[in-house]
Image 1 (cartoon, rainbow, N blue to C red):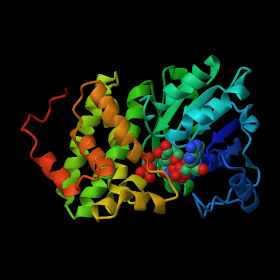
Image 2: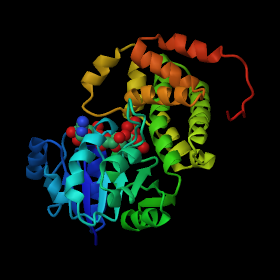
Image 3: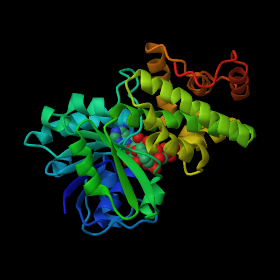
Image 4: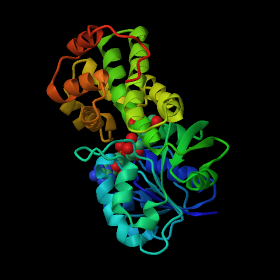
Length: 337
Ligand SMILES: NC(=O)c1ccc[n+]([C@@H]2O[C@H](COP(=O)([O-])OP(=O)(O)OC[C@H]3O[C@@H](n4cnc5c(N)ncnc54)[C@H](O)[C@@H]3O)[C@@H](O)[C@H]2O)c1
Ligand SMILES: O=P(O)(O)OC[C@H](O)CO
């Protein structure tokens, strides 16, 4: 049994906390808002983000980061735009030896700095904790993990021993964990697939067919891998769980919030109205900008990302965006750069 701290009580943090508590670990779940923490503690259910899954009585709920300071495994599961602030607030509590692993389960790229989530953790946490940073990604809807449905994910860390330790602590008969040392590829896969899920949703919302969706998934994967390889990722990572696996899940699965944003845009709703109506995060909205900036910085062509960004942030007509994609200059399929 290990002491585990889960930082973030949205749907994914709650599902991971449940997984680990059911495995017999001692779990402390941190919610940012004290009012949310006391509601969770009283009702023993996360009605706002993951209704229908009772939290076991032994799971500790808190809004004080000091309560996770003794954890051996720390999972950071807040939306990517809030991760730096949370990591900065966590840092003073980790002044001792610190946890054996700090795992980001967020899927995004920080806007402005264009840093990955493990970069942000390494910048904000004390060096001992920063050296044990990892990322968990892959096709994993929170509700399905909470329902104990078979799921497979990847944990990547620069130091293989860190990933292997996290694998051992987290794996169960219904949660299979693979390891990787491709920290960049696993994170880019998880972040960029959200942009493609918005694109697939738009296409379906416009009433296009399965041909169109399959084309978006495949060419989306090509541009994800193109950027990844330029940034030092292993191209094979994009054929794995954190690449193709998560891409297929979110481009086709209606539980995806990113896909839902796209579907509603495609049906003609305005972005702000959609976001006002969702109490959850759709990371692809912000990541589309960061991905476009990252691609521009490194001279990588990402035409689908570019069009998603225009639709989301510049009010560009989705039908026109598809037309422009179809009328791009002809090219060979298998060019990587
Ligand atoms: N939900 C899933 O199925 C799932 C699966 C895998 C990965 N993820 C990733 O996990 C991360 C968290 O998403 P989620 O689905 O748990 O969120 P959610 O949409 O279910 O809930 C959002 C949570 O973030 C908190 N929050 C909002 N703004 C914040 C800020 N600025 N700082 C700190 N906390 C803030 C909210 O209070 C709430 O607890 C995202 O990066 C998401 O892509 C989600
Ligand atoms: O609901 P989404 O679109 O944020 O997707 C959730 C997870 O990332 C699926 O792996």
